[in-house]
Length: 286
Length: 272
Image 1 (cartoon, each protein chain N blue to C red):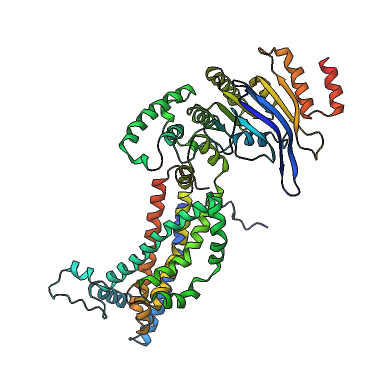
Image 2: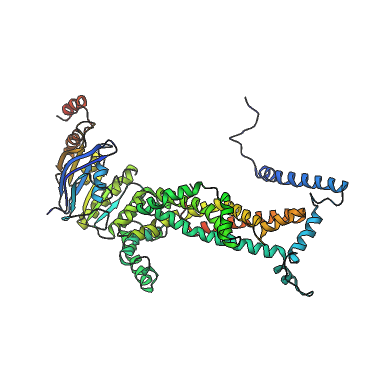
C-alpha cells in the first residue's frame, strides 16, 4: 500500500525541516498564551498561568532586587550592575552552580577509579562487587540518612550527588577501559611502557572522549539529585527558590526559573561537547 | 644458544580444558624469518601470544635469550592485524611513543629536558617515516586518516624504532588488498635484511609464508580433539625458484590439512 509519499526514504527540504522542527514550540506557546488570556479574562488576579508582562515583572524583580529572605541592603543609588549581582536570580544561580561544580569535580576520582578497576585486576576484584551493590541503592532513599549523618548543610547535598552519580560513572569508565582492545595494551608494553604509562598515556587518553560523553549524559542525573537536595534542605539555590515560590503560587518566577535552568544545562552540555571536540580531534563518534 | 627456545609447551582453554597446543618444541636462531602457517583455529596466534608473553602456557616454558619473560616487554616488538596504532596519537607521536616512555616516566615528562629530547626524537621519527615511504605531510595525521597499508607501515616503524631483537607479526597484512600487501611484503623483507632482526610471522596464506620466510613452521591438529602440533618444519631454499613454488605450496597445504585425501591424489598427478 502506498500513501503517495515516502517514509524511510523521505528527504525533507530545508524549509520543511525548519517549519516542522519549530512547529511544536509555536504550538505550545500559542496554547499557553491562549489559555492564560482566557483565565485572565475570567479572573484578572490569576496566578496559575501568568501572562508575559507578569513574568517580565516577576523576573525584573528577581534580577534586580535581593530575595526577600536576603538581608543584603542595597544603597538606593546602587548601579544596575551592583543590583544584578545582589539579586535573587544571581545569588541562587551562584549557589547552585557552586554545588554543581563540586559534584562534577568529584566525578574525576570516579573516572580514575573506574580506569584502575578495569586495568588492574586486583583493584577490580576489590571494588567491583561493592560498586555494583552501591549502584543499586536508590540515592534518594538515602536522603534522610545523609541528613542525619552529615547534617543539612552543603556536605549532605554533595554527598547525595556523589552517591547517586559516581557508581554510574565508575562502572561506565570501568566498562570503557575493558573495551579498549587488548592489542593496544600489549603494544604499549612491547614499546617499553610501564603500568602507569599504559593507564594514563594509552588507556585514559583513549577513553577520555567517551567518558566525557558519559558525564554529559549524566548531567541530568547530577541536576536531579542537586535539585532534590536543594528543595528539601537548603536556604538558597535555584531549586530552593522554586520550592519556596510554590507556596506563594509564584508562577511568574517559577516558569522563567525552570527555563533558565534548562538554558544553563544546555549551555554546560554544549560547552562540554565543544571542549570534547577540541581536545580529541581524533575521536570518531561511532 | 637459540634466541627463542620453546620447550614442551602445552596450552588448553576453557572448562573442561580443550587443548589448543600440545608438546611444541621449537628453537629459533637469531636472524631467522620464521613463518607460522596453519588453518584458522589451529593455535598459531596463541603460540605468538605466548612468545609475546601476553598469555601463559599451561605446561612447558619459553626462553627468550635464555630467560623466561612472563609479560610483554621491549625485547619483542609486536604488530597485530588490527588496533596496531594508538588512535589518539598522530603518526609522529605513535613512532616516538616507544623512545619517550623508555626515557621519561609520567613525572619527568614535565621537565625542560623532555622538551629538548622530544625535538631530537621527532627528527629521528621523521627519518623513520621516510624509510617506510611516508612523507612529512603524513606526520601530523591521525591513524584514522591513513589507509590500512599506511597504518601497518607506521605500526612497523613504531615497533622497530625501539630496536627490539624479535618482531612478532600476527596476520599483519591479512586485511590489506593484494597490491598493498605485496608492497608491505617487500618492505618487511627489506627491513629484515637491513636490520638482521628475528621475525616470527603468523599467516594463513601459504604463498605469503613462502615469499617471506626463511623457515616455515606448519601447525596442524591430527584430530579435532587434539591440540595442534608442529606438522612440518621447512627451511625455505634461498633463492626459491619459481618452479619449486607449486610443489612447496602443495606440501605445506598437505601438512596443514588444507587438502583432503581425494584432492590430494588429483594434485599429486597434476604436479607430476
